[in-house]
Length: 369
Image (tube, rainbow, N blue to C red; front, side):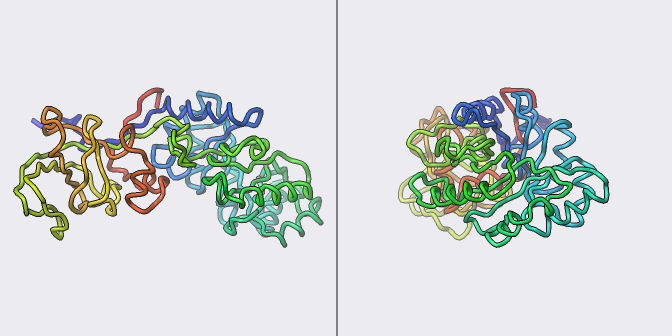
């Protein structure tokens, strides 16, 4: 009879670690407040569970990217302020109002549209306004900022600006000159505009010091255990552990190949562990023949290509007592840092987390999910 509790792969999410990382941010930036960035399904960890844990810890403000994310989150956090970073495109305005979502307005056109909606509904609508200080993505560029500042009373009619927002481009590098340049630009912009709370720092900015904190910070990857500034010791607690079960162990002779394309050939008699995790689960295909996994804390190289559902490890040097079918292999977490996986895949820790597919069950520990 099959075991209904069998899980070939698992992402263990430590909600107590997420809360601990939230508390750390509070200590670093106080008296500024700390919001929770839970876009992309809580960076892949599960926005519902993460939001509930943070709300229980006192967090009352959250950021998402998409309208759909905000609508879903409203059911979980009925009284929280939820900012939508994508802004307020005309066809999203009714839903933003209905679900009491606060758009982060990114242009004069969006400001005008949101103001018009306030007039039509005979209400004062809350908003945040994004000022581009150097990312050159979303946000008001310099020319639009000047136009807003010169006619703020008229352009902001019927609106209540609850937050001026900008975003650091190089906060993961505390030595980057761009950080100070953007800080100066943001301060200059705020001096031109009507007074309202301001937010500048995400996780990296939190670690840059209180000059960057302003009134609210917006940690994302730090909440989920990312070592955003690649410090020798990660200041954030590990919040996610990805594991897969060993399905089969086999010994191959010197010269035999492993996996598609025969990209790995054994240089000695080798013990291969085949693990139930592949690129359909979000394990980066690029770490084939480059990455590592860990069994009982001992590291084993990934050999051969990562395939859709499976990955193979060279476990020859691991203690035999730790090896059996059903043994779990860790691909990131306590023994292997997110950043190490990202380096092997030539990507960022953000992508490593958010790539984990829905078919990998999330298992929550440490707080009610």
